[in-house]
Image 1 (tube, helix red, strand yellow):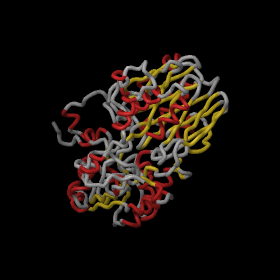
Image 2 (cartoon, rainbow, N blue to C red; image 1 turned 90 degrees about the vertical axis):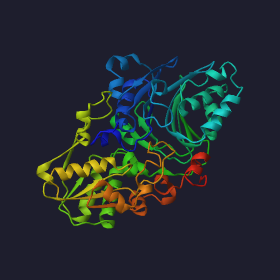
Image 3 (cartoon, rainbow, N blue to C red; image 1 turned 120 degrees about the horizontal axis):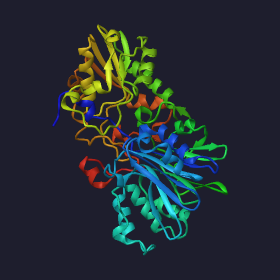
Image 4 (cartoon, helix red, strand yellow; image 1 turned 30 degrees about the horizontal axis):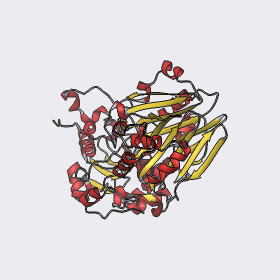
Length: 484
């Protein structure tokens, strides 16, 4: 049942699949380093969290549903001793939101265990499942029992196990070239840490240096929080191995970079660096471009916190309209297991955002937000601002209309649920109740990132997928099955 004003509760917006973290650091408290690394990546996944820690002889795995701070405590972290760890925080895109799909996954061969964490989404799971079922390399693993979860991560882990008789590195070099889609993998046996990134490098994965070891993580912000020095990005199509002999690298596929454009819009933390450019700087530039493309006569620019803040700053700078904080966000309203009552649900957006009436009353507002997916959030926001006394509400969006679903790890709505494919910009404006609405152009967004169009995946905006998507979904959407 839908209740009036329940929009933010039912429309959480775009979500990334996961955050991954790995550390190899003898003599360090690797479980605590992983905890703080995952804490920095919490925005990438808030359904479950876990880590696998190795002491060289065995791998201990601890994971559960909930936020990083809910899953781990001091006693748990103290019990996870070792020299190497693999960590993960998850949103579900492939597979249900259940404990069995929490990561890292773990499987054993006759000679070693494998713990694996994955960010992204594979597009050829049917093909991989068939390969797994016809493999005979590991007859001691009954075929019917090879899969104990519904995620593509468990499938990759099983494949590494089945093909692991020559060692985990060789298994990876056999399995990784068969994977299609987006994947940033961090995995280990008892002694060696591995990291791999898909040939398109769709989502970020970076390498950092500690005084006594190495770190890999989804974002540079996770390196910063534990005092690691950023070295470089893991290259598209690269497999990195880290162990007692040091760090080694090989390429399992030729790189063809197609970085996710939506990382710049929303997914990544603003203090993260992607392709040598800090995300905050890119978002401020997006706001400047948006102001030039879609000017409006107004009194105040306010962001939808916090994802709209850098672009609102840029919009204010370029337009000369003062910047103000007209909305307060409750930072502690995240994932909750408590279902709100109907009375609370009717408050809707106020659970997360509350207007400062003294700031916005009587003002003509420019409200800068990162994206419109279904439109529910913006509709509730405009209504709330008018009730708080805003004279006009002009909505400016720092991304183009989201037209197509993502198959690479962002949990967008289906195409039928997206508001942009079925309505014109003017119709969307009327639907959300704004005085005006404008999106940044795709060309303006791309230029603001500093990266060339051909090196970005912008499929959610233009329907051009850099990796072939499932044929049935392509046919359903009237697309030819694509791929760079």
